[in-house]
Image (cartoon, rainbow, N blue to C red):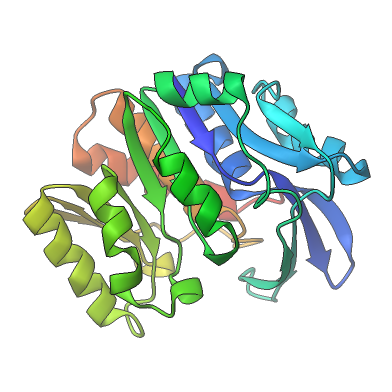
Amino acid sequence: MFVCLGDVGVDVMLPAGFERAGGCAAYLAVAASRVLGPAQVRVVSAVGDDTRGALALQYLTANGISAETVLAWPGRTPTQTIEVDALGERHLRAYDPGVFPEWRPNGAQLKLIAEADVLTAVVYEQIVPLFEALLAAPRRGEIFVDFMDMKDFGGDFRRVRGWMEAVDGGFFGLDSRRNGALIENVRAFAADSGKLFVVTLGDEGAIAFDGIVEKRVLPEAPAAVTDTTGAGDTFAGTFLAVRALGKPLVEMLALASEAATRHVSREL
């Protein structure tokens, strides 16, 4: 079973202010389900008991993924305000984590975490205590973590190194012009640990560091970029799902890049 642990919420899109289902775990799960099939993918999360909670689950159920393991928790559904510019690039504005930092998995969710073949998670400033509690939960399968763009941690590699030692691999979404030293740190850590880490670089593609093996993919230019929201999650979900099928690293990168390119070319 492929289990995605993270936020399921609502995106508020500026300037119009319309709302749609979103969240890192939701985008990642849908991408993985397109490779493995929806029956093989589960999401462990929580939404609020407000009116946005039902909307937040629509993206999962519309793609055939069960929402039974997403709890309705007293409080607000996680909400991300996003502005998309004329080039289709998304810019994150205000974020309300809602119930997500306070939520703790129930027995059924912990059982799913323990039995997962592949577990994915995300970490950012507002949920560090939750993330560390989940890291300590019993599990038998592999865990891969998205460390995102590291802005919440000041780009300081030392802030995440301990977590990298505790997981099987993960993802970073970085800028080669601003984060060169951080990318080198990831490269060195992968080589020393023998673990798999992937750095996505936006329109510059992605680099996978699998121990001392290094592979890079350059994306094809999309026909049109309408919205980059969820592109990194789509890449990660596809990459890990293809990996779960036993495919080689170059195929993981190629198929993940293709999926992310398709994702940014359509309205969500």
